[in-house]
Amino acid sequence: MLKFLILLIAMLLIVVIGWWFFGHHQEKATTARLNDNGQDQKIRVEVNGGYSPSTIVLKKGVPAELDFYRKDPSACLERVVFPEQGINEKLPQNQLHQIEFDTSKAGEYEFACGMNMFHGKVIVK
Image (cartoon, rainbow, N blue to C red):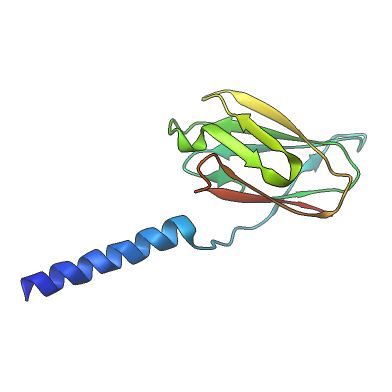
């Protein structure tokens, strides 16, 4: 009976860990703020056990800057990769790192950490 209980707990932990890392978690999208004259837009993304916000909305055709601030010391979150834009940048810990993002085409653009474990999305509309 004890072996069965241990097996059941182990299987439950495997399911929870799988959901945590690979499940699709819904987060409210955050819209980047336009500067006073509406000529560019900026948003800060905190990197600490993931990306917050993980879903970012940008206005099409307005130059955008994503400001990543990495608090997490893990090697996994040391890089941010936007495969469709050819962006693969190192994020220094406890420093702001600015990435210019092309908003000329509407669409959804995925990004992830260097190990592809933590994900986010930029929506240009």
